[in-house]
Image 1 (cartoon, rainbow, N blue to C red):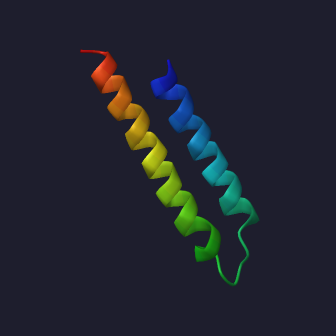
Image 2: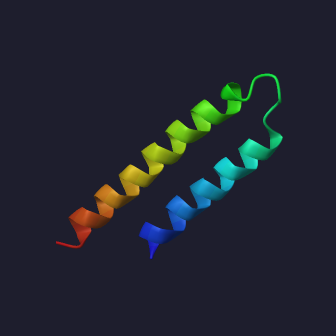
Length: 53
């Protein structure tokens, strides 16, 4: 269950950052949001893979 909830929550929060990102410099918000989303998703999937052995 957590393998679905955490990545989904991260993607929704990244989408929220896309909405509030300034028009002149969207990379200030979108770059860190994308890295954070990828990091949390990979970490959750890694832990899920270890526990499901």
